[in-house]
Length: 165
Image (cartoon, rainbow, N blue to C red; front, side, top):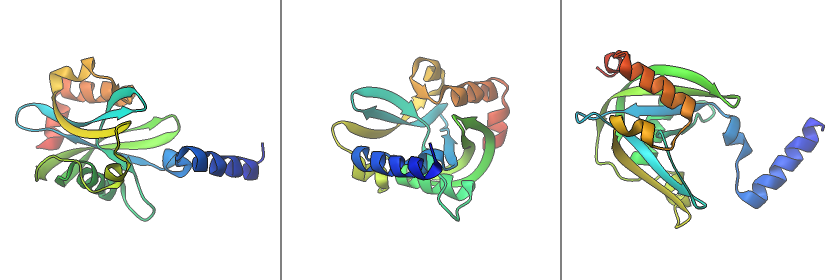
């Protein structure tokens, strides 16, 4: 299939499914936010009958650094103001570059922000930011699994706390 045909097909598919192919391959920046109660902030997702959890985050927009993207995404998805972000780890996930940042300081109250997620919110597409006990990570359908394994390894080795301090 020629590149032109692929672009045409992806544009057509995007139109009928509301799926954004550009966002699917843009680099992604995600936040690792902990509180004093050893809880991590996650986004509980219910989409088309499926239920899962994700880290707050999203695509790095053109002209934006990954650090700027994670701060913006935290505000859009949780209403929190994030400061003092440090790169915890990076990975490739199905060909998409992902950067995970430890967030040292946040202020505000956790509620769904005014980003695109709020506009997409409906009965079949829910976004719910929630604090979850770190000990519960293994029992959640938290995606992507490869990032969960890396996060658990950092926690076990005590390295993540050094990044958050």
